[in-house]
Amino acid sequence: MSNELKICCAGMCSKPTKTRDKYCSMHRARLSRHGRLDKETYIETIFKKSKLMPNGCIEWQGYKNKLGYGRRRFNGEKQLVHRMVYMLIHGGNPIPFGLLVCHTCDNPSCINPAHLFLGTQADNRQDCINKNRQRAASGEKHWASKLTEVQARRIKSSPLLSDILAKTYGVTVETVYNIKKGRTWKHL
Image 1 (spheres, rainbow, N blue to C red):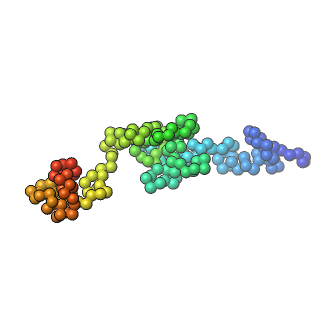
Image 2: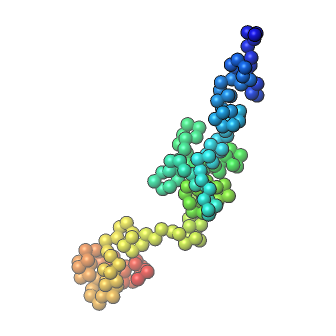
Image 3: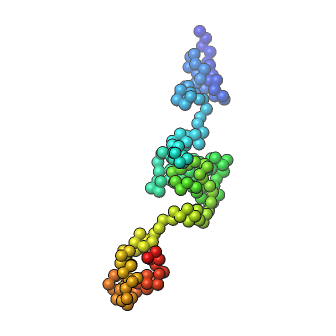
């Protein structure tokens, strides 16, 4: 039996091996854990934590922010996963300043590269309008609304003067005027 030091035969590794093994402990562990000697690419680790859905979306299964976008640490910083995927799939170049990575599927946790496109805020907004999915913040759903739909209908159809209606409903005369003229509560 020789005391000769054996070197790992994995690529450019120069670490010593254990007796009767051709790989160092790191490469042996990697081979048994992942079935291969090289490291997983970053994109592979991302897709490993994702799930293919029947609609074609590939949904991130890791941490998501309150808006539903996947988040993960990348190069020491927390990043949105769909942005990382877009960047890595398109050559690793950073996304130009002022551009968004938008979803054609409108699913914030989707990371399918075929569902992602670069666009400005205006492009994203236009896409939202084209798909008729803008959040209807009108009527009583509007954050500043002080009236219910029933009250607004009563104001619109009332023959009373605006100042009387304003006092009755606790709003300004201008609010009553805008309802009567159809400038606000347009859907009534």
